[in-house]
Length: 178
Image 1 (cartoon, rainbow, N blue to C red):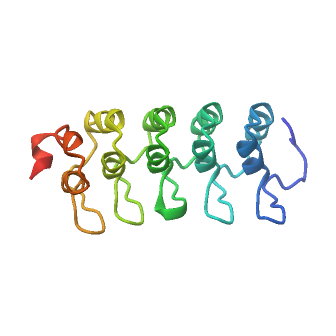
Image 2 (cartoon, helix red, strand yellow; image 1 turned 180 degrees about the horizontal axis):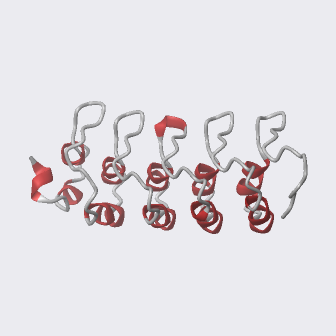
């Protein structure tokens, strides 16, 4: 282990309130990150000054190997909220990052109905963003709720129709079209 038995604070922040794990994630330094994650004192969910957790950085920078490492860590809070109230799943959809989307969707603790600060679920976002493959993946799940309304009071179907995503709205099951 990198710092086993050391009194070093593995979560110490620099002047910009950046922790070592955030630096390693943002740099994509897989080898050093792997070693750091061995230390049970590391806060894998520690947000930056802007509110982004390391998982958000991995998605934002399209670092899928790093993202997989974080998702495999039992300490990860896969549904942690970042700026805009987005989870990593919301962010992957907004970034049109299908690989990150699929990795996150596989996590056993994923909340596919988490709402961002505007009340949008990942399904709302996938419909708005025109992400057909992501919409299909979400619709195929048993745990997706189709009747959750966003801030303006729209269900995913209503939001899709209202934003002109008619073809994607047709992918939703009949029960979602009420």
